[in-house]
Length: 323
Image (tube, rainbow, N blue to C red; front, side, top):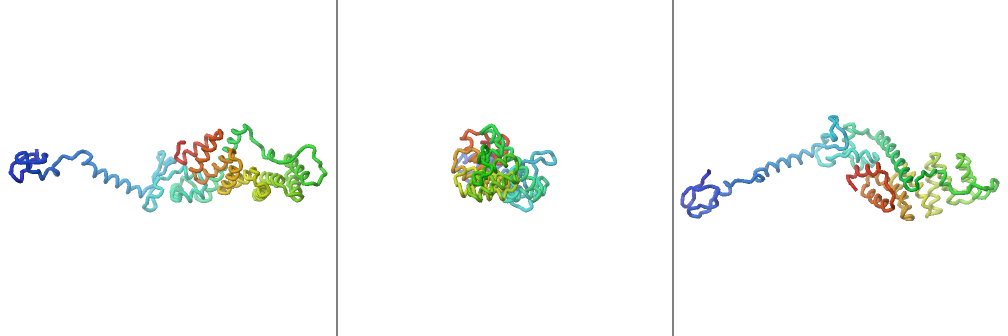
């Protein structure tokens, strides 16, 4: 047992007591000699270890959502320079959005994944991801529409006009439009375009522009379709199908912000139109604006419509939310 000598009476006593048991003089060695608890002994070591761990994180990237060469569900890569930006690189998030968006939101992560060969670079990656995302969008939209009316509406069902008891010789705008509808339904597209154009020249009504735009979409002439849908909206600002169709073209072409604007216009006119919320949700998803995407999820749920399970799973994965 360690002892200390009293500075007053010079007698020896245990170093662990606070004062001399003989004269009551305070033990000047008490603090330094007192037994330390386990956490007091280890606090310095733990602090040093924590500092080293945090410091080392400035040199490495931890990549999740991939399978490493060792078969692990993550990988580690050295950083190009010291820092803490994008220390955790989520490959699922990066590959779920268009390359342009990924480069803006996760520039270092894109570079790391490309450097390690997990994704292609530049234009190749953008092309592959755009095609993959578009394919998924079409699949999800089809599934969502079927959940609404249990059927898949053909483009020709959207045409506006009469198809029975048509005067084939009349030269008024309605007759031209109706003949165009008949031709379009029979896949005689050049004739349909000609008839709709004649109707527009006679009387530029929204239905002839809308019908011609639908044919342009079918033929892949998207710029012409956008111009005609824009005319539809100018003539009939409350005609929501004009916004929906134009927004769909923007969504298909990866022009997500104007697509969001069009779908928002539909929602403002028809607040209960679930398909507009879902299409806007896809655009938010593509831009990586996950909070706004979740807001639309909740609005769709209030309409009683079901969101495709695959999309729901992917949204939860990339946004790290379990709603």
